[in-house]
Image 1 (tube, helix red, strand yellow):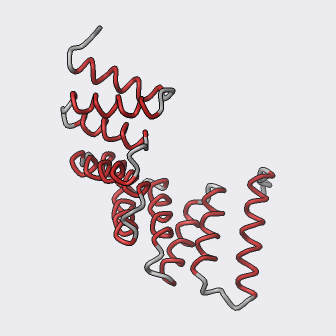
Image 2 (image 1 turned 135 degrees about the vertical axis):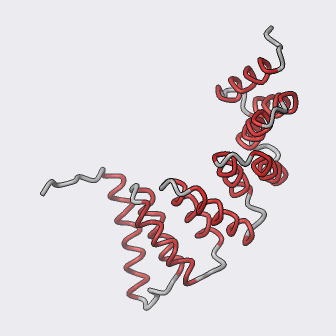
Image 3 (image 1 turned 180 degrees about the vertical axis):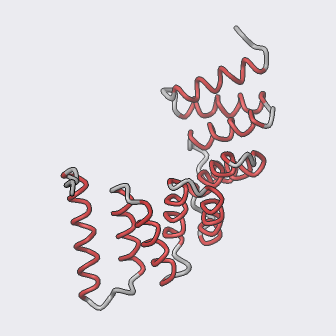
Length: 186
């Protein structure tokens, strides 16, 4: 049997979350959704996404309106390559907490992966509505617009992303591609 070493920082994180989980269990709180959520986060940080997914599902079983657990479940599903399930789960998280911009941005990313660019665009616009200074949401909006052939509006989105984060090489590259599509090679 080969011994697998765990890096010290990861081991410390696991020990901390495990301790919280055990303390909650000893206080007759094994049905505590927050404890299961914390366990899922610890497992996620260790790259054990299958186990994290089960912990998030248990948190949701105990507290069906736990928006953060739905969100983390969707991220675990995404990492595991289960995009359709991730999107459905993300939509449930958004239903529970529609003012969470990260959820809208992530939903847009999942829609884009599935080739649903109009839906992705709507999600990015909602994320921007909630946080107009999010350069990632602006860049994602530009990419969705580019996929839809709307290069001029995509260019405007990329320019806003660059204005918010002038050191983002991806935004600059995307702006260059949009300019190229518009025939502006100067």
